[in-house]
Image 1 (cartoon, one colour):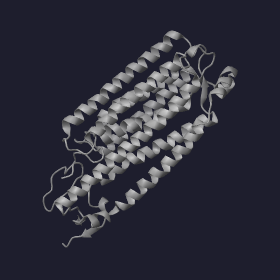
Image 2 (tube, rainbow, N blue to C red):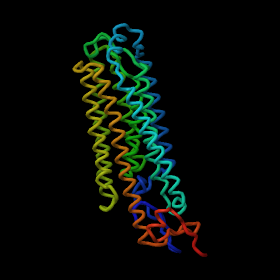
Image 3 (cartoon, helix red, strand yellow):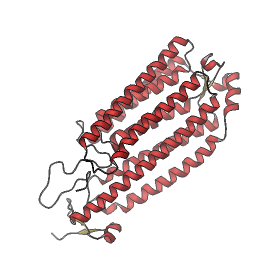
Image 4 (cartoon, rainbow, N blue to C red):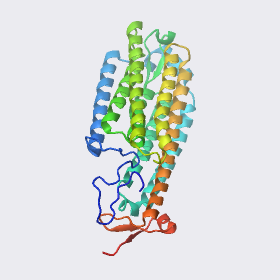
Length: 355
């Protein structure tokens, strides 16, 4: 049977069905339940992120860049058309993925009533569409010079270095989505395992952003050190995801190595982000180079994750078709079955079985 899709066969029903993996549903059910665990995780992360961001904002009180002459001059010099081009590219990618998602959803209509859990494979592309929307907003802000603040005097050796806060705010939305895609929807970890690294990551993003506006050198670098320690903590949790995933899943699971590669890839990419951040904080690179580096990496990471999930989704569909062909008849509450020919399955037609 295909790992990851529940199925009832005739009068015989197994409690829990086939629940190893369905586009990221856990190999073991979460103690809090699927939907409840998701709502609790997202809700707690949202509240904690907003609270920490508000506390940081009130503590450092960032100055708008346009109100600081030296910052405004530097910021205008470093701004480029890169974000404008990025918006066009992201809008195209968003449109293509939205159309693909819609057509796949429609074509899978008959199967949704036959194979339980099939709807779950549509959640990752839907979340990726959301990341593209947030990226478009981020690049629109950069292009229009919105949410740009002046760093504290002396940061990176500049009098008032521009800080593109929109980039950090975009991370507070998209990075949790990427971690949930990896931990929950690719590696099938329970929501309670996903919660801590997501929360820790958002907290160190807020801490890293606020460090730009701390004038005393000691407290500023203390915040940076704590932020990198929290990155290490979250990364260890992600490694644990992979280890437990490999221990709990069969070796013939679709895209098993690719799912693990996604988690390790995110750890590596976040480390590169940290290097760029440190180079910017120490003045090794200009704010314009920092901006271009972050924008290029933001787009590249999301596009690569999109491609990874396209591969995972394709392998799942292939295994589903093979499983349905091998088993011929797949029953559900409504008494449906899947036809046993490639042509009929390709047309996604369900046949009503005689009672």
